[in-house]
Image (cartoon, rainbow, N blue to C red; front, top):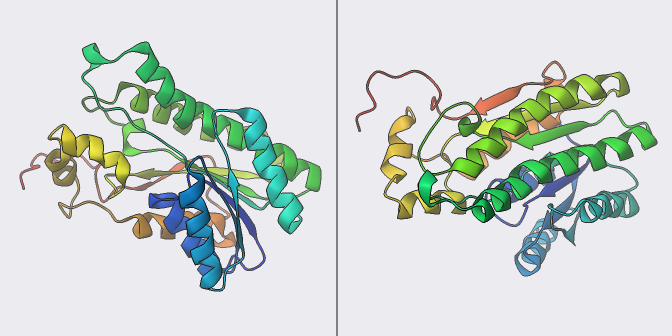
Length: 255
């Protein structure tokens, strides 16, 4: 893998998978534009990346507002002249039984996890086409775009939509030389699993995976960097599972 000279935009980049992906892409030679709604934490991550010798800038962005996502893409072009990689990673979760969910819970999660991905795809693709860049758009889906579980109504709905948006985007953008792919992480050791921890479902998450433990963000970041590279040019329109066997049928999920 080699991302030398590439410009990558990463949403939700101040923590978890987004932060790990930024670090990995920097190691592979990319320049990174980090976006997050948490300005203080995002700036700290960028400062750390620069101290490690990387080129990075921060752009405070609410991915539920299309104009802000457009401005994020413009920031990348203004800073580095182009955009080659768009990693639509920002996500939130609400863990409640279905009958305790409210419409506000549902819309809050869908706005970030589904609409935010669509906005990132649209803004990046328009700019890539304008600049004649044969880039790649990577969306963060989930095992829960494919399987059912308890307590995450809006999250599952949004992640299922991301899987389908990825297929559709690949079809629409292939004539312009733009790839669209997704990753499907399993249970990753990030803040989103805190809801499972509080709901007493963390053990279930761990037991669904073949190693019986959470995946670390750095492990998923390696998959993201691979999908961003020319080494994965034959992968398009699909979701690559990074789930430690979560979606494999298992007749025994004991500890």
